Image (cartoon, rainbow, N blue to C red; front, side, top):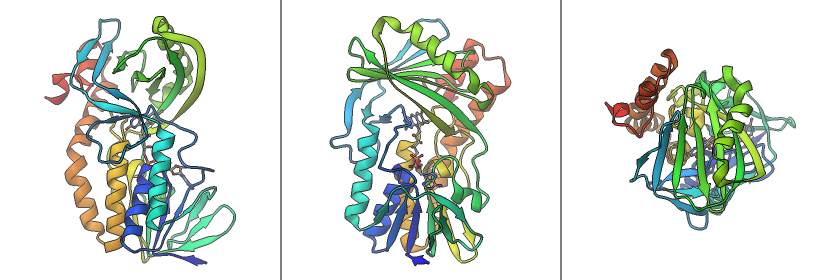
Amino acid sequence: MEMADVIVLGLGPAGASAAAEAARRGCKVIALDRKAQAGLPVQCAEFVPAMIDADLAGVVRQRIESMATFVEDDAPDLKPDFPGHMLDRAAFDASLVEAARRAGAQIRFSSLVGRISSDGTVTLSNGKELRAPVVIGADGPRSRAGKAIGSVNTELVETRQITVGLTQPHTATDIFLSAGIPGGYGWLFPKGEVANLGAGVSPQSKARLKSIVARLRASQRERLSSEILGVTGGAIPVGGMLKPRGLLQDTLVLLAGDAAGLANPVTGAGIAAAVHSGRLAGQAAATRSAEEYQEELEDVYRAALERALRRRRELMTVKPEKAALRRGWIAYPEYWQ
Ligand SMILES: Cc1cc2nc3c(=O)[nH]c(=O)nc-3n(C[C@H](O)[C@H](O)[C@H](O)COP(=O)(O)OP(=O)(O)OC[C@H]3O[C@@H](n4cnc5c(N)ncnc54)[C@H](O)[C@@H]3O)c2cc1C
């Protein structure tokens, strides 16, 4: 049985930020991820808003200035003031892991967490056991730590994304809203000479994702080159915020990022919240202030996530005509009313 002060499950943006923060505060931190290396494979459209509180040196691939929303076949509505960055997400995740390593956290890849027992013992798939007074679950939408304390994401969106060549420069994130993309939306996000083109839908429509993305690609063919350079996908939690703390006997469990349900139920954006909540979780682990951690997350995220959840559920219960699609998207004033 190996002992630590804090065990972090997952080395995405939430876990790496948590590990760095707890280590900086003097904790012995062991951080585990089943991946072989940081950030790969990339399962992300790679957009972050300009106001993200993270060091982006060396990981930005292009600036975004605006958002263009296409509702069915209508001409796009342009939201001019929508600044952000397209990241190299693998490099971003790797830089956060490197910061955690520099802060003194023990970083262990190729470490699949198989089980978390009712007493908080963390068991890896190779049988190795670890224990700590605090376990941080930053292990994504289907978090095992969350499951262990009964805080589980019950609503997910399934996605498919291709990377394709872009024949002309573009500085907007393009959003495609349609009744033909149920429970989600399509996107084309430019990244220099390529673009991430994808769609997310409710799990019941997962089988249709391939044809939805193919249709989107066909509709944009004039500005795309023919070769597909990559394919990815993954689940996004869209059920809203979960209780981010629990106890397994004496072990305190804190959830951060997607594991805490902090991705936006409408946009699916979760990188900024993962970094922020991870940092707060690392701090709470070091100071054993779980209640304050929950309060801070409630203050910052609850209202926005509840509005998004309401809008998403409204869309799911009506026949999504154009007016309903607009009300369900952040670019339109109706969304905020
Ligand atoms: C297709 C797609 C596009 C997206 N596009 C955007 C976007 O443009 N902008 C945005 O802000 N957000 C986007 N998101 C959401 C964003 O990727 C997540 O919100 C973000 O990654 C959450 O970070 P995290 O650290 O909480 O979780 P993750 O990044 O999912 O990290 C969790 C880590 O835990 C590890 N793990 C899981 N289970 C185990 C286990 N049992 N043992 C060991 N390790 C484990 C995983 O390997 C992973 O590295 C997108 C998501 C998808 C799927």
